[in-house]
Every structure is written in structure tokens, then in C-alpha cells.
Length: 130
Image (tube, rainbow, N blue to C red; front, side, top):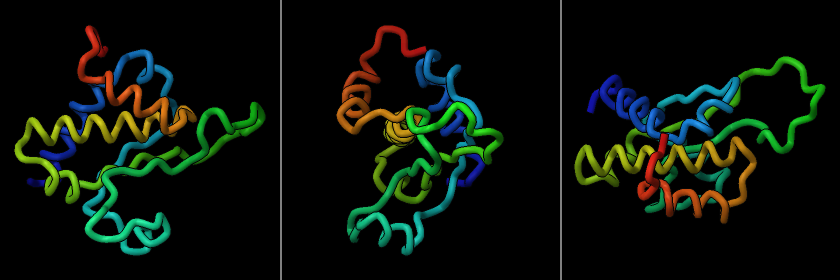
């Protein structure tokens, strides 16, 4: 899949994130990269055949001080290659991207892995996800 088509799926998945979370996201860039680097996988302790679908880079909201001043945007990286390889079709792909976004946005908000997993478990069953 071409990058621009994948980025449209990422934008579509982002629009499906509940509004209450989207409206609180500030100074954060969501970027698509082809693959996680070998160095990143090594740093994260991830060994083949496992890989990384996404990564939050920044300081979670719960760890910021009030006097933090101006800062570069936090980043969420979405890795296109692993998503495409792990998805059977476009419907699977959009679900996988959405789940990755939820997970990484959870890190932005400073949520624990357990809290993030609970949101992921309930995400697609919500009555009104927006």
C-alpha cells in the first residue's frame, strides 16, 4: 500500500478515537514510518519474529510539571510495514491501526498498561466511540 493511502487509514482511525480523548490531545504529532529500526527494537528488547506496531515518544501528561514551558511536540509513531503484514485486509488494517493509536494515546495520557488494555478491550464495542 502506498504511504498516502496508509496515512488516510491512520487519519480515519484517529477520527474514531473517542472525542473526549481527542479534544485533550495537544502538541502531539502522529507520524507514519515504514519499519521500526533495528536499534529501536534492540533498545526495547524486542526480538524477531516479534516487532513493534507503534511507539509513543514524549513525556506523559501525568509526569509533566506546570512550569514545563514550550516543548517540542510529543510523537506517536505508527509503523506501516508491521501493520500491513499482520492484517488480512483493509478492515483488519484499520482495526489494527485504531488499536495501536489507542495504546499509544493511552501512554500520552499516562495510563497504565492495565488501563490501556481495558480501553482496547471495550473500544470497538462502545455505543458511541466519538
